[in-house]
Image (cartoon, rainbow, N blue to C red):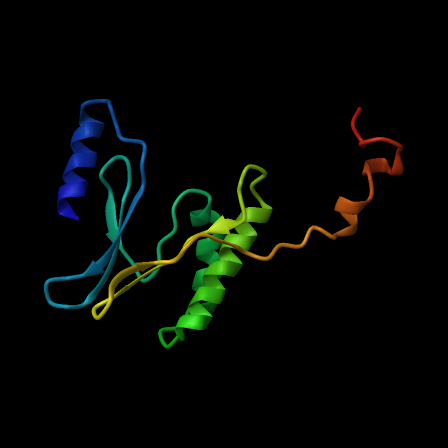
Length: 139
């Protein structure tokens, strides 16, 4: 955690930053759950939930609204899938294939196989060409 902060900060000072945002999950030396964030300029913080990139604008508000400390694993997975679905619908270059990681004391790190989240493009706006014109709706 601190090593990553130093690396990112030093690269920033050399005017050659690594253009990454890093999420670090695990357990502290005291055995408490840890979730931290390091950005490309070496800024760090810890929080209950973290998102990077476009997710920090759209997914974090959803997680803040629906998160509670006693979430079951299935509820947490459903919340993450809802967040990813919202992000998928709003990014024209995204794929609906995701992976979810889970960190526990007993099992360590478990990363799911890639899977597709359900999406629905049957909205009338997607089914009818723009302007009710023949063709693809372009100019």
